[in-house]
Length: 316
Image (cartoon, rainbow, N blue to C red):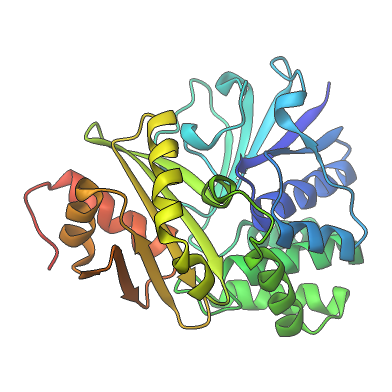
């Protein structure tokens, strides 16, 4: 029976790399492991897979896996699971995010660390198993660490991530910063993408206690000028995403990774009130720009979680 290793919906490079990297390690341990993706990959991930000669994994929703064992990587919350995933068949979980609503009727293997990338954790597991990843897999996981940590600029970055990246580059042997720049440039290109796809490419859903179902979409770019010029178009598409996902709130941030600024496009008064309450910024022409705010995991989600837990407390 196959063991499927699956990352989150709207996969980023770390989600894909963690699935492929861990499936390869499991195969060396005698497991019939198969990596899957829970959605189409972005241009940056496509560039990485092509550069290192790795085939794109099959889509999880095209696989009939209700009876198979499943390993979740780079996520744990139900809103981010692949469609048709049966929770009772999850046997292992490897992640670097907060624990949300995940629970299990049976004991499972769980490994989480507060680091910048799940691929950093997978790399350490290779070392612990005294296995050396192939050059192509090392390059893939290195790419994931670089992009998830925003080239080591994100506040989620740890020395652990830097150490794992250094180890992987001893195998992959690339110019890390040049490579990361190429990946982000590819990922930033939305010239031929419908804007609703731009929103959905890095969209995650969070359930904050019983108070709110909140969608947080992030688009990382090396230049926010072009996307911000299409603000009104984004608002139209955001309304569709909010309605189709039955969300209480939908936050969308265009993150300039060079200037280190999150630009929230305001969908409605409801979102504006929430952002003002939590992040204390000022809205100018339908956009709230917050300097130094680049990480959804470490800088956006925690204050939102606190807000919904203590609804009357203002953070400003």
